[in-house]
Length: 142
Image 1 (cartoon, rainbow, N blue to C red):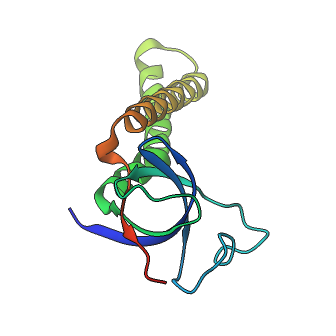
Image 2: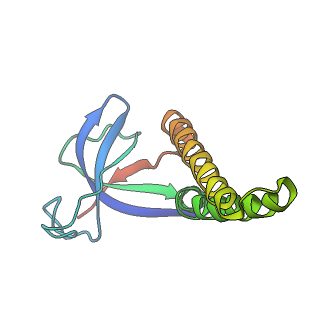
């Protein structure tokens, strides 16, 4: 699985983990420089193998496959399940002789709720599984 290295600044240490704000380049002395003052900041909890401290510039790696799976679960799965549920409800209406629109809407809502449950379950699993978290591998030279 391909790994991608990114730089960031350690904001806080939490036991064996660290809260890191990713940055886009190495010549940065501020945790806000690359993202702009008006942009919501993204902080990521990751495994702190090198015992980095708050304020340290670090390089971390994340497996791209895990990011693709997460993006699929969060963005594509709810749409696919919602449309699939709506289509299934519509098809079911002919069999049970009920209002097609009502069953299509009901099927879509039911499958969307199922996708939310899948996202929550996957999130809880990923939060507990350290092998899925990004890992700090070294301090940054910059």
